[in-house]
Length: 402
Image (cartoon, rainbow, N blue to C red; front, side):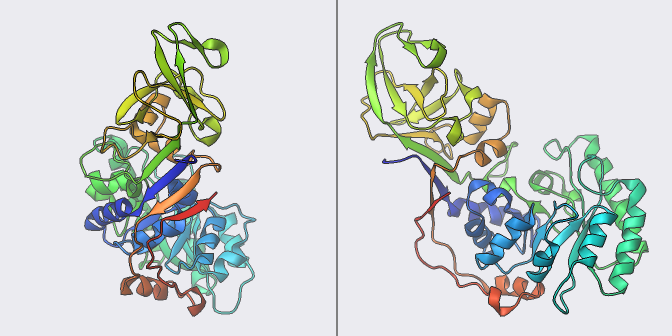
């Protein structure tokens, strides 16, 4: 190896997409945060080719970037302030989530080219006190949105909410969320909006709580292989590796790194690896984390620095340039993002999205030909011919410096 590298296996993403297509046909693939650092456009195309029919992102900026990369399928953006650039979003047929009246009016009042009516998804809070309209404001939001729809200023496409306890299917908060969501849908139906897409479930809900699936599910974490239950055969798609820079022999008691937080317990060999907390190796993992070297797990010793870590490789025949796997799918015993999440007392989402911009990205897999169903979803979005996608049939092996 010559440089730290984050490798993404789109075949794993395709496999995961097919798993979710089996439980929630036409699901929404969530590709926010550059698809959890896997490459938003590449993951979007892969998911659409393997059962997804919609895409979800957080910000308008993310949605606009997808359009600029030739993605024509329906895209929903669900977190924007009232003064966001809704004009650009509407012009690119980006659907928008609405949680309050101020946001609704900002979208309805946004200047737009003729006959481009903004598609909206009304967002109900069903128990998280986070995004979404609280119950005491929901009816007014539905009635006002329906009034604007009648006048041709918006089009109500969907109704949505979120689950706080989906990773624990038996938790009573899930049943409460379902009942609250059903009540919110009833209010919207009584306001006159009956042909709407209902979506509540995330990855864990779609797999473990069938009642939460409704018309579609928003699949993010599972698309990238995150499955806390370990029951569904999802595959992790991301591997982080870096080359050894140098190796030194160390006597027993040799102090290592800032503050000498570690001293070698016996004669050993220490390998220097050019990755640190600026690259997404959390400082909090010092003293517990391991990496894989020549098929063996070896501990990171000493303080994790901004640009480097030290690995105790024992008696392994390690040389400069040899690869060190920080995490991967786990197929060959290497640590996974689940291991790192445990070591850092966080979740896999943070580990995946925390990889820094200095790490080179390589995307491996043949991107499938774009199926007819993909073009059908583009027509559903009302996308113009300018958004047509040209399938890339090359073995990507593509490199993108972020």
